[in-house]
Image 1: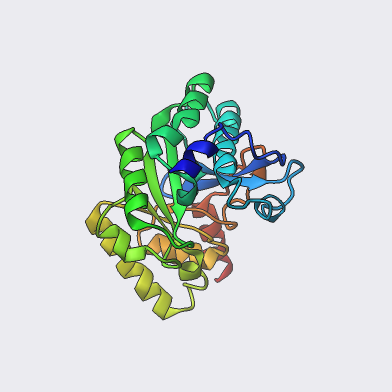
Image 2 (image 1 turned 90 degrees about the horizontal axis):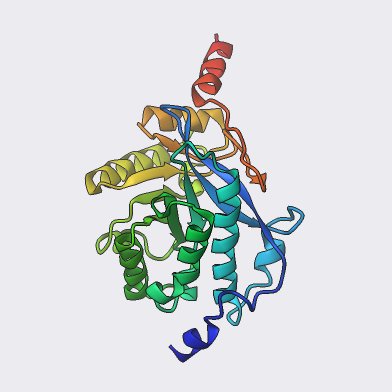
Length: 259
């Protein structure tokens, strides 16, 4: 804990400049943008690797804090004031020492910018080895404070089903490797279909990410998926909001071309 306390300096220790791109998560049943995910980029729009390669144990707390601030500040300016659009922020569980202490800068930024706390989704990936008890404490604390929670890259990491037996986040994002080629792969289709049924039974909203083709989009629509994220609808847009294509129009045009 001593390391965590000495690191709590409101993100001042991460000096590399960076910014954010935003990629929409679309409700394809209504063509409404459910949320925009904030994705780290270099100050001129360079890829995430140019920034993430500089994140290490000594500065990851500061980086995590600055990402939250940057995402909220940009969203407060870019998001439509008359819409209840959510902001999805990735966080690093191993950079959170004590959730109620480490959330203070996030809360202060939201209050300062007027961004509603109920519209913030905290999502974490299961691609690093995590202390399950620590993660559960973070997720439970965030949920109690009114934030939405999401498990990213489901099916590709360490936690997976084991985590769901202890805590059910609001959202689970199915990893793109489960989605890739689902229109031509019966095994993937079966796995995704039963995963969706499980999430429905648990009261968890699924998001399918990494959707790149109209074929994948069409199959997911047939399986009843509502929330989609991927290049088929919109690529990330640097310091701006992309306008997603209509899923219905894309699928309809493809269907016409087959006749």
